[in-house]
Image 1 (cartoon, rainbow, N blue to C red):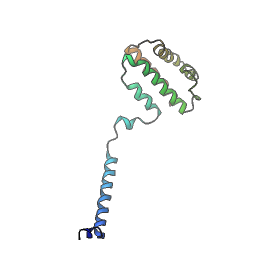
Image 2 (cartoon, helix red, strand yellow):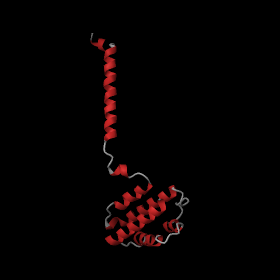
Image 3 (tube, one colour):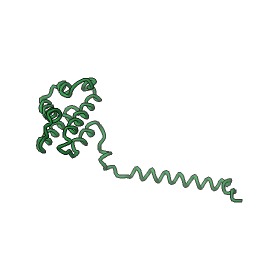
Image 4 (cartoon, rainbow, N blue to C red):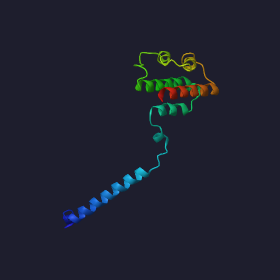
Length: 141
């Protein structure tokens, strides 16, 4: 007697309608969700670098930070075919292929921090970021 409901076609019809309504409701809510989070805005090659350039960095972690910024820009350029396989090349070799004036100042700061152990002041770090950002925009776009 208890299993009679399982064999009732009306029960299955109502169950299917309820499941379909739930699925449609969930899909509509997901579509209406505001897409203003930083994850949805960061689409495309430039935004990978921009997110990194906007991040906070302590003086102790500047070496790794600059290394990651350069690695990100080089990988974006490699994806776009602007440089051949960059793995066997140094940062200086990769950027010298661009033939741009602003490259030398960026490389000099990078090498001072990475290999010289220098810590940049806040102004110098912002200058590095703005120059790298300008280079990335001119190369990527």
